[in-house]
Length: 329
Image (cartoon, rainbow, N blue to C red; front, side, top):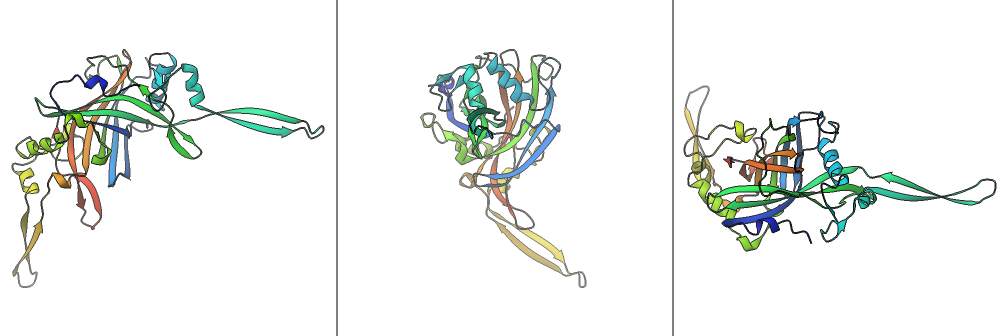
């Protein structure tokens, strides 16, 4: 069996570890910037975004449309990436990829003159619906920083009107991966993404402990620099002093208004409850994805994240978003 966390089992000083399986908005090449609004796992009005940073269609045999998907499938066909069954138990051959991505229909017809039965075999290519990427997340105990990596992916096809995983493709990763250097000629594709992941989507590896994120929360309250949750994190401005502590602690705002005729002052008091770790619904993650043709492998770097809370808009609608962001790079 292929164990996706096996490569991390020897890492000392890991305070927390978990896995996720997510479909990211990274394969739409029709625009440089894409945004998609959706709901999942209890998070409502979630926005996922992607921004294309680099694509090299000169030095790789692929078109801009479905570029990453075509490159990865090409790696499988050339033998550079291995192929496994969905349960990761059985290694598959290249010829079996065609079977996985092809459906067969048997059509029985009759000759109108002789009534002779004829059987016709028709093959249909199953277009890849999407790619589900499996990632490992961990907290480095020494520097208390959240890290992540991408282990591999599942091509998703549509069968009988339902989306399902076709096979498992792990990345044969070297011990040390390249940095996300946009001018590196071996890095032929790069994208920035933001996504929200519900806490329920993290499959925690309990042998590394359960309270890692809680410790990160405590550290963020105690003084890790916070940044405004607007746009990509590398463009974000620092929050003003005591911003986080004011949000976390319950309190009361005083709103002063004036009567337009008498100019009499009126005071309205608005109480707010504050937030704590128990009210965290998920994480908003800012990542840069980049494909290195020299290995070949898809890499990812976590630029930062924010704890996601349920909030209420001015019109009364509920949505989920972070109050602040934390940089990890």
